[in-house]
Image (cartoon, rainbow, N blue to C red):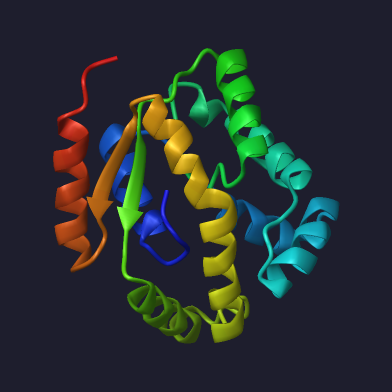
Length: 186
């Protein structure tokens, strides 16, 4: 977890590769559905273009479909999900149904000005229309309102691992693995 631009996607790829599990990114799922012109993608695009969260019903269906794919049978890493309390409840149901368990929630902490800078730079490099400064600021507000409170839910379960997301990618990656190494075996 962490605000948009904290480096979740970057770190998710390294973690997933290390544990040989798929990194399931809601952002990637949304963009794939948008580019393919699916009904869910068309719905998601309206919200993404405004910098709003895609509604839970659409997001939950996309995530459930992805978790049901064969490569996720032995575990998976979620990037960008859950973002709301309703999604936490939905994820709990998905995990129970599949027989998986939630081992850890990695929370990357990054300075807000650094996040805006990262996302504006990413928008230029990748040509991502959803990363304008106004949209970035709106996404930060939504994160603080809707997603940050989820950290408390997972802290009560004892599975939050907080990691400083500032610095070079390799430094953050090393911190993530150090933090995950101290988790008790489930």
